[in-house]
Image (cartoon, rainbow over all chains, first blue to last red; front, side, top):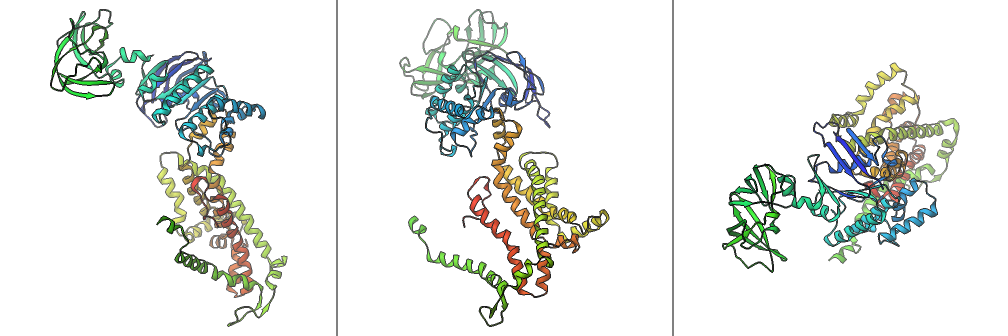
Length: 347
Length: 273
């Protein structure tokens, strides 16, 4: 298994004044499954290609297992990239596509055939070897691309938007396949996505990238509960943010005084108070309970979303179907912000 | 409705036939004349048949074989050079954005826009100074003026539709730069290269003006010979020569329609014949 270290890497494209990736530091453990998450154009694919060696680094070092590989050519790195649009070679059939990497390694023909059959079975495409890529569906193409990458037993597997082009039901299937492959081959895997849900579904850890800079690198749970900034919170659909002044375990906001947990590592002074919609409870309790007017009610199937107004900010809260007392828009209701669910960010 | 449209429509058949007659009928006498010894109005077919033209062509003293050979050599060399220069240039124009690209595209098109007579007069003066006038090498160089732009522009269209990520994918699977080119890039653009090359060949094969100006009559090619026979009003010989002259074009027409139509790169020959 291979670890990846990115040390202060930067990429400046020729003719560009602004760096696409800047001062990027990251440590990916052996056998880990990591997501590069960020809006499009943030530099995540560029970083992926620098790991693959397809783009050179302008500055900094790429290390595999502690060994600098900056000058190792892509074809010698044992790193395979699977592209978003699969890129199956059109004038080769499925078996020839999958065996391509083995042929490049001068593996004897009978062994190529054996390993290609084996891997096609694994991705549930046995018997598809003689088909042409044009005869395959999107999901099948993706599985061929994955098989083509895995058959050479790469040290590192790189996936560019692996679930982006698939229908909802195929996404689940593909996610399970990627997870099982990752477990079976124990290959260090990095994938790129702009969809936070996709990142959370697959990755052990998420590297969140904004404007070519790594802004947070932690297990996916932390992005929901402990985002490092307001922008990160919003990117993860955590829109309930209110400004306030912290003093000890109390924050004074437009809603009123809120009690927060003692151990939060934020100094007294101006702060942003965050709480996820599903953490707000629709009931009256001893602390942090406020009587507010419901602006909007949206039935979402498994839950109901209420929108309440606080100052300029619209707040969303969800009441689970069984405990929602059936409020209507215009009603006044009690909302409780449990102190243990409140997260503070310095302003 | 749909079914009816698929049925053979008599009006369509009449139109096809009309086009066929319009294209082929002028060629019919061309194929009869070489075998005529005497053929006068109002006879439909020659009164006396003969193979004088073919005997003349086959005789090595009469320069015809030499002219065919010269034309062939020049056209092949011109085609090879056009491929070697036009393919990389087409790739650069089709795939990359760079400063001054618009100007370069204009300069490439310039020889096709400016009348070749004007260009060639200027070139002639320079070629005389360089000792290139009246030489086969000079003729090859001047034939490249129309063929390289042709090759470059048609290849830039091919490369504009080509996804360079395929090359990255091959490299990431372990293919060297050399293998990537031969296994990935070349098959993708090959139909485009073949089509471009065949037209470059034809442009050179059919070239009269540039050859006569730069070759100065010393470099004898088939079109030159054809013109001189045509102006001497020897229909038998002219027709026989023009059959040889037509041969590559007909072969290329069949080749493109048989092997390239419907294949990748959007270079589809002339449909299925």
